[in-house]
Length: 245
Length: 245
DNA sequence: GCGCATATTATTGTCCGACAATCCGACAGG
DNA sequence: CCTGTCGGATTGTCGGACAATAATATGCGC
Image 1 (cartoon, each protein chain N blue to C red):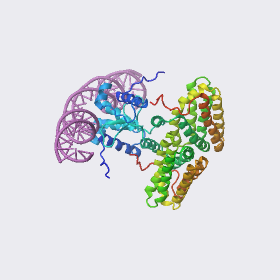
Image 2: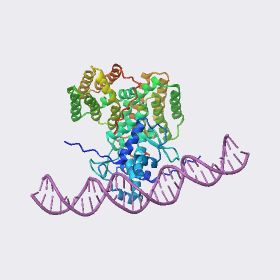
Image 3: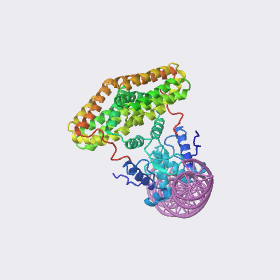
Image 4: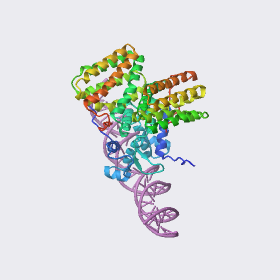
């Protein structure tokens, strides 16, 4: 019947005040934040309180530190930061590999399509280079996995759609461990990935959205076959390795 | 030649230690965290340091507070928390309505498909109820928007795929403001949404994945028409209203 | 004047101790 | 069983302190 009358601790109000200024683009990316002491003075709270607020913003990826630096700068949440948060959440929601795969299947053809339509020459080159790198590296298992992920990332960037870019990251992160197993256990996996990537690159180069989507569908479907051949149960939960950092 | 040798401030190491225990399911959801003083004792750091660590985990959604409560409990990141973070990130990446729309177009048919295949009777009922609610409410603009979002959410839940559930939230959040404008300015919008929802519900009821996906595609494509008719430029940036909370 | 090493200063990370507000649990009374 | 009271535990916030080091100014040689 009654709402709880809202009270917010000071550290929260401070963090929201700063966050709003950032979202409003009032504090621009790359700009240095005032010092903790100065913020404490302006908000009229203790420095400890300011620090608690800063920690919140830091872990939302809105504030960051330049390497080896001391002061905080306004940053936009990076792919890694967003990916870390989401994949962490998915892990705790008991996501299974089949769930990730299904999402991949739903979204990747659309990304391929968009990439084919809008790729710049530079993005195309990056994509081709990624495929090349995977094809040329027959040795290391983990590097191969990184290359596959990089291919998807390059495609996301080529689509020039930040939603796709940010969505890709967590899915790939969760995919990687099982992909490593597939590459280890399924001899023909590398070849099939290589072939799919080649066709996708060609379609993107030709700006043929339809073909790009089709090959991507096959590519993703192949992963599912990979799970079966490698003997990974589809109901395996992802993220038991917790490499989030 | 050399990596910078890793140093991490204590508050970070504490927060990572706790986070790992949570991700490892060592600390289970719903469990109460030890008190700040106790944590400080165990980690052998000051309580202020512990508090900074807790603020980080709090804003990743891994720790939460029961309404009006004081102690912290282990929680899984809620849809809202994930959605807030992601939509905040997308806002800062200058995402445009057309980007969100494109992502919706890519992902929603897949969700509809999965929902059709796996919906439980309960989920179907929830979905139908949501459609009903939208159809029956011809008055308020904002409530109508909420109903549309709820329909997508219900579909996501029916798909029984946490990836879809969590992905939906930020997209809907960013979609809402423009959707409100569409409903205001495009007289036939309500009717078309109502019709699409009806067909989707029917297809999901019949477990006809193909039809569900097809109608969803039409439904999403309609939004794009809506933008054009309502005179919203597709390159409008989303999230200028910053209702993240 | 300019580049570079060096000295100063400012800022962060961490600690300590304190205190008010208030949530929690127990306990008594109707 | 519900309500009111009470004491202890816990959080939120404060002030001050200090070492380490990043940032900045200073001086020097050219």
